[in-house]
Structure formats: structure tokens, C-alpha cells
Length: 107
Image 1 (spheres, one colour):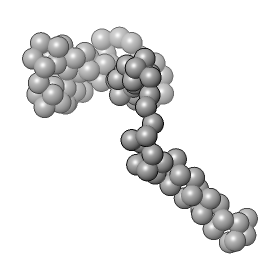
Image 2: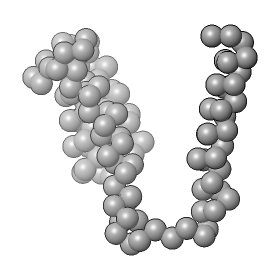
Image 3: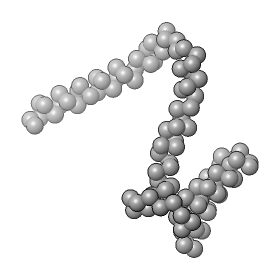
């Protein structure tokens, strides 16, 4: 690719990003989503988090490992139980990281 083609690609990507993200700021107040879509979008952050976190918890070196010897999975389960009982987010992070460190040393 020539330098001109690279700069054109960068410029077009910049333009595409500005149009897609900036349109929400410019026209967001004028667009009304149906109530069912708004309700469905409430689950988007949880779904995105699950899609990012779960593969990391169940894989070790690229292979799925669903047993008691997986320290990431066990720490994740422990942190989940802590959160469900206390609803304390910072405590959940501390407990999860502490469990992971402890289990990594033990296992």
C-alpha cells in the first residue's frame, strides 16, 4: 500500500467512527426506541461481561478446563457466591482476587 492509500484508509475509518458514534450525541434526543427494545438493552452489559469473562474463567492455555483444579474458575465461583450474599462490588473484587491468588499458590 502506498502512503496515500494508508492515509485515506485512516481518514475513512475516522469518518466512519465519528458518524456512528457522534450521531448518538447529535440525534439521540430525537430517536425513541420502542419499550421492548429498551427492556432488551438492559441486559446488554451483563451479556457483554459474560461473553468477556466466562471464556477466561474456563480456559487454561487455550483449552477448556472445567474441574476443581482450575483456580480461575474456582475464584470466579467464590466471588459470585460472595456477591450474591453481600451485593458488595468492591468486596467481590477483593475476594475474587484473593481467592485466585491463594488457589494459584495452592494448586
